[in-house]
Image (tube, rainbow, N blue to C red; front, side, top):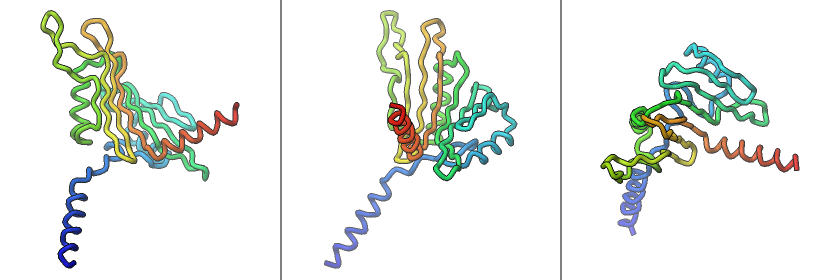
Length: 190
């Protein structure tokens, strides 16, 4: 029986070593799950122009020239504290596929390989031998507490700029509370 303990210990170590590490809870500019006051302070410290400010959200400009806006969404806990549950970063209209590739490279450096990548290059070509590019791309990183999504749709005209490209960070635990509150609100209205 003494030999079973080292074997069980070795299995536990291997299982822990192969388990993926959790995703970061944000970037250098924000952290999911922080208080509203912390977000307001960070936005003020970055000297970002406020576009719109409500009790459940804050929309501001960005210090990244590629970004049109940053939207911070808050969940109000029963005890009144507002917590950051979602951040949406909206890129300027006309973003190119090269811009998407740059953002994707940055996110891979921060988050590792994605859980899902839909709409990437397929290798297929048209009659002229040019690569066929899908009309949309969605890349997702997810773990039990955090989800990050990079998504873009492409226009029809030359040179095929995106009609919108966004990165959305979501606190999945707080999202469940937001969804439950929304569902409860619909039930009470019916």
